[in-house]
Image 1 (cartoon, helix red, strand yellow):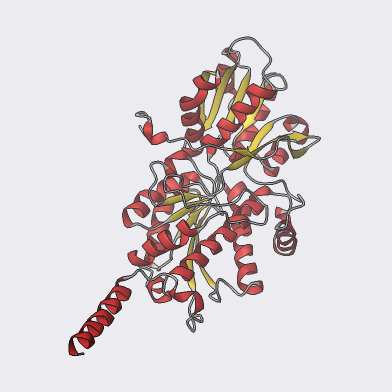
Image 2: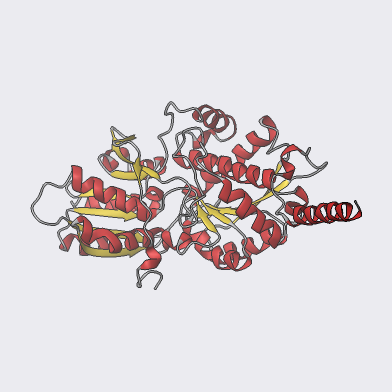
Length: 424
């Protein structure tokens, strides 16, 4: 009997030790929220600066959505989202300073509007294991996969989707079509360049010119004159909306457009682009976009429109507002998964252990999450694919309105890190 009792005690102790050694997962699902507790979220936003035509409505969209989550939905699992946000002005040095500040303030993860701002932040973040989410993304942000994730397909995916659409639906000539690239001189442009480098030959496309421009450009007559000399069939622009409008107007002045087909990556393409270029000049331009169009009959659209009209009516019909509204829903889902699978005390510390828990228990548990149909379902569970949504639509300006011309197109994962030239 003594030996049996001893074995029972040893078994209980061993079981207690085993339970104590298990990860802190699942324990919080039934616990009430800590009094005064909150979930800290860091936002690095291009509210001002040369990309403000996109960054400002994006900032409004995500901040309005957090307001909706906190005030109408009661936060995340009963915890309010405590937003720490700063304006990076689309400046690399500011972005690097901001990511350090967000780490010091104990945020669980951070987001950026742009690939450039994430590229300027990610070395610091990856080294510290501080997870980040880029709304607009480039392959350099997520390849090779580390601690940075992307909300949706990147600029390389845009190029691939448009190139395939062009070959299947537009190109009617003999031989290979001649494509020119006009690229913003940062990761926004380089993502499309890398995709073309990886996939043009396989698609049967000849890249005849690659030109770069700055976000502050006032004229691209010289670069377009060089492109015109190459006699392209198609021009693909990966930039933001203001420079893209200048490029299009210059192409119109040079008599290149209408005539040559023009396609745009999604940071180039939106209401601001049409307004800046003029609806008559923008007519017929193609773009790739990873969301539905404004006002589409999807479940999540009503709240987007309601809050936009109430708080930022100047942003109405701007897809960037909707884009970042969806990002904030994803942010909340990441936090929801993290708090469901991690003790709040771990997250509240806001240190490397909290960041690891947020990534592994938060990001990696987001599987097939629906953002109310605003874009494709979000899944971060694949350890090799850091993109959330994987789908895009090809759109076109028709009668001055951006209109989808395809359904959802799946963007396959391209392992850029397998190419020896990538990142050099």
